[in-house]
Length: 227
Image (cartoon, rainbow, N blue to C red):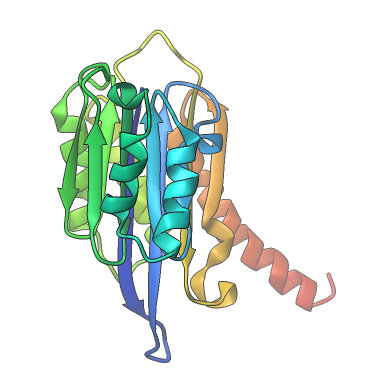
């Protein structure tokens, strides 16, 4: 019912200081996917979907924060999960990637792992959706902010067909980006966004990002002028 992308990037700020950033973007043909799927911290990013087990995301990130590799953490949690055959989960940490789709997920389902990113989806029109998301991210400019590039990746997946359940019109999308830089240095105002119920969630997510960055900057300037 969902497709998503998890990303890890290393970058340098204007002063040349090295930072890490992690992000998840997701969309589905159900409301409020942002309340269930994306889990992101300064240590890693995980997306849990299909028959969601929120513990996989939350506890998985806790283990990653303790120094456990994301693959080891999620594999251990899946082994203890009686519903693992219906789970789809993927993620990244600073060193590697992990992706899993249970045999009882509904098709089309599958995943793709790249260098420092993962993409996965289920109930999709086909494998080309996952490939379009991955290709969009791979071709993006790493010097640009991550959040709009994640939105572009979701848009590419939707354009390729996305979630196959066309009778479900209420959809949602979300993105979360966390960096090790201070918020004022990382553009944090557009890094935690949700569209919970819409017929055009990815387009609305893009507009929300624009409002959260451009309009907030305008409001801040007006505040400084005492307006």
